Every structure is written in structure tokens, then in C-alpha cells.
Amino acid sequence: MDRQDPSPYAVRRRKLVPDHRIRICRLESCLADGGQELAEALEARLGIRLDERTADGAISLESLECVGLCGIKQAVTIDDEPFMGRDRVLQAVEDLLRPPGSIA
Image 1: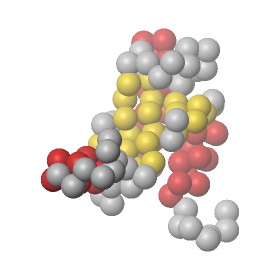
Image 2 (image 1 turned 180 degrees about the vertical axis):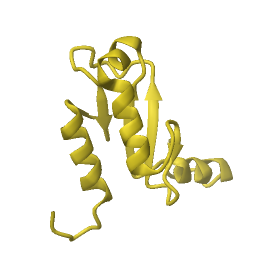
Image 3 (image 1 turned 90 degrees about the horizontal axis):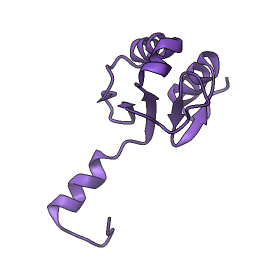
């Protein structure tokens, strides 16, 4: 996207990009290996469903047919960084939700 483009369409596109993107694989192999439960846990913690955004627009929870991490069970990326394991994913989400400057 051209950041110099002053058109209303360019402005709208910039507003649609969340601060953080959580992507979860929806292929059967990931779903069968705990991915469905992880997706449900993420939905519950964020208060949104798959393919929605938090009320403030800061975090999106996206389902993809494949995130390209077939060697990782419950394949999830957060801001394009791969995360492995339910506990690590949920901790990373807690870190995103923590107010800036607060102590863990």
C-alpha cells in the first residue's frame, strides 16, 4: 500500500489493520490435535469469535486454512511469529492484553 495515497480507500485500508493478528490453522490435522479447543480458549479469553476483532480493534483472531507450520501441533502465529503449545499461546495473548508498562 502506498502510504502517500490520500484516497479514502487508502485511509480505510489503514484503519482496517489491527495492532495484533492472531492466526490459527483450521485444517483437520490441527483441529484434531487440540486446535479446536485452543481456538475456543482464545475466543473466550478475547471475547470474540474467529474472524472477528476485539471491540477496540486492536486484536484480530483469524482462521486460515494453513499457516504453513505443519510440523507444529495447534499451529498459531501471533504477529507472524509462530507459537507452539497451548500454554505458550495463551501466555502470549495475556502479554498482548496487559496494559503497557504493567508488571507481569
